[in-house]
Image (cartoon, rainbow, N blue to C red; front, side, top):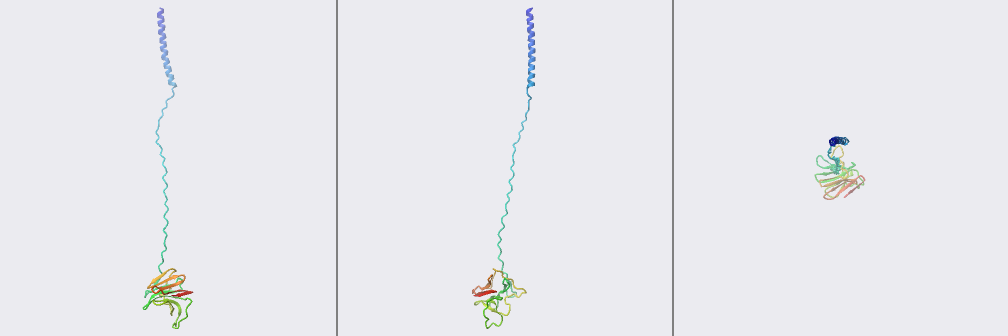
Length: 204
């Protein structure tokens, strides 16, 4: 009898132990689940690298080239032509002398008419106006004129165009130049000529 009771106690104790073990395991497992921290799901987003675009270089402003230096054209001689004989007629810049290069039947000459000083004495063979101009011809030196009227003029209503300072006329074997010292005309072949101004003159 005593041995049967002991066997029953052992069986009961084993059963209680099994139950306790099962309960303990279940309790421990639940505690672990409750105590475990929540799982955080992290989503990794791949951000493409940022490309910093540099500003475009400012356009280069090219300065315009300097304007070309204009060379002043040399003015053409201011002359007019006689209607019939093709002579060159002009005046001094101040209008005090009327000049011309004239081709005649017997000679070609260049001369200027106007008041000048000094004037040499009147020759005996001059019976009209004396010393009102100087001329040079194909032969010999230049000489003062003995003339009763205007010779070197185109005959227009106004005085012939002026030969500006620094300008010259080269025609029919003569060269006439306008300068501050007066008008000068020279025979290109002989080298003879004259210079005439209101207060001075010379013959060569």
